[in-house]
Amino acid sequence: MAISKRDRIDAIERAAARCEYCQTPLDYTPDPLVIDHAIPLVKDGTDRLDNLVVCCWGCNGHKFTSTTAYDIETATIVDLFNPRIHEWNEHFRWSNDSTFIEGSSPVGRASIDKLNLNRDGLLNLRSVLKVVGLHPPK
Ligand SMILES: [Zn+2]
Image (cartoon, rainbow, N blue to C red; front, side, top):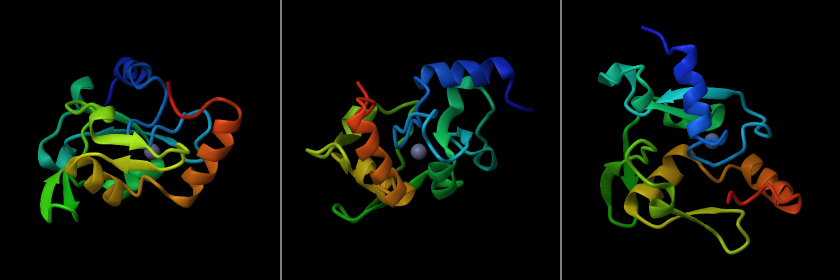
């Protein structure tokens, strides 16, 4: 099966046209848009809208087929952030200058580490988008 054009459009609208992991506006990310599977197809995930995640190629490449990661603070393996079941604001927050994503839960911390949500290019982009009022997201 493949992702329908309708589901693709709905997924992008639902994501407010931002990467659902790093929150980068898709109009400004240097990486191509990817429709990710929260639960990967190789782990019996589906192509249905309730399993689709809009993200940038960078986040998708780091996540690959992972669904869990290691949280260094609690020294445990935890679920990765899943935009279909988790609220971004419950697991992440912006640093005071809103450049860095900080984890506020084991899921958040492990996901930042696994998906490398504070990549150099993203930090630079956030600084520039902040100047023009496009960051942090409302
Ligand atoms: Zn991203």
